[in-house]
Amino acid sequence: MKVLLTQSASTGPVYHRIDEPARAVSALGEDVEIQVTRGLATRVRPNDDGDSELLDVDALGADVVVTQLPKTQAMLACIRMLKAKGVAVVVEMDDLLSAVPFGHSGHLALVRKAMAAWARECAREADFVTASTPALLKEYATAGRGAVVPNAIPRRLAELPPAYERDPEVVTVGWSGNVLNHPYDLQEMGSGLQQALDRTRGNSRFLVLGQKWDVRSRLGLATEPDEVDWLADPSDYITRIGELFDVGVAPLRLDRFNECKSWLKPLEYSARGVYCVRARTPEYEFLGLGMPAKAPKDWAKFIATGVQDADRRRELAAAAREKVLAGHLTEHTAPRWLGAWRTALDIAARRRGAAQPVGAAPAR
Image (tube, rainbow, N blue to C red; front, side, top):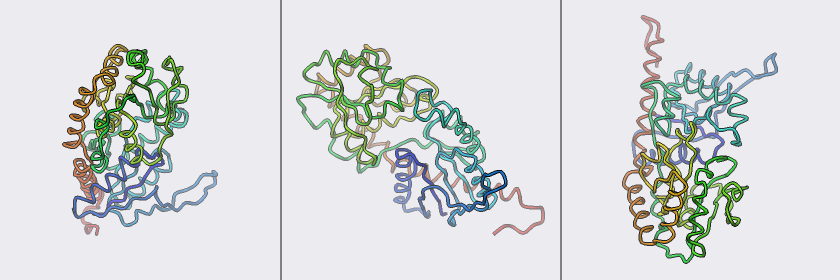
């Protein structure tokens, strides 16, 4: 079986949902050839309406084509043409695009300009859908047409020296992300973060790995937090989490978008030995790593504990990291990716058989 994985333009999803799965499945030693490309090679011509007409899509000889986050009418046409050629098509989704909140940097394109609607149509047209959470799968696939493959961490990163081995004089409370893409999430801590910083004044600081923008005013912080610029390479970013953070916070507003969101941030913190305080979303609760917080008093209590009680911080962080090593590595999810692609191939074979005229010779 040859599988063609096509990347989207989003670095993080490409890393976790295309590149690392390809690496992990290849390491299984199964009879599968994997090729990764940026998008699909197509041949088009302009039509009388000023748009383009799709003439051909090159599957590069693949039996299965995986399209990541397709969200245009052109991609829907590509999926239909690939199926007409007998190729099995898998759509890979890791966010509920239709629920991106107002204020998010992608809201205009995804919601108001209907790219999310095209994504849903692409998923409906596919032979099979893979998603990072059960809630996402319900949104994008009917029963039997999809599989959940949760996000995981490569062993080479999870086995780096963990954060809990340090004994810092000043404990760094960190958050990783871009405030413009999380316009409401940090505020879920309310005054909890500042309360914790007040209780541990002189022994703690707050750091953003990414883009902090106006986070000081959003959280009512007494001082401007430190910032380390975002790292484009996800391996570098995950590595730096363990080098910079001692306590990691993962607040999320409980809305439809975040209820479908994967458990990635607490997983990354835990893999790097960072003591984690996180929201109580369904996926975060199911993962079970980190201290669950809801009200500001919870955030204040658990963050302060992580700063003040070094032994407790190390104990909980080490236990969480062991859980990642035992069951949340990409080598653990690789068989699920391979199984999803093989199922798509079987579905496509049945589809071709059903379309075969009665009495006709089987297609070769």
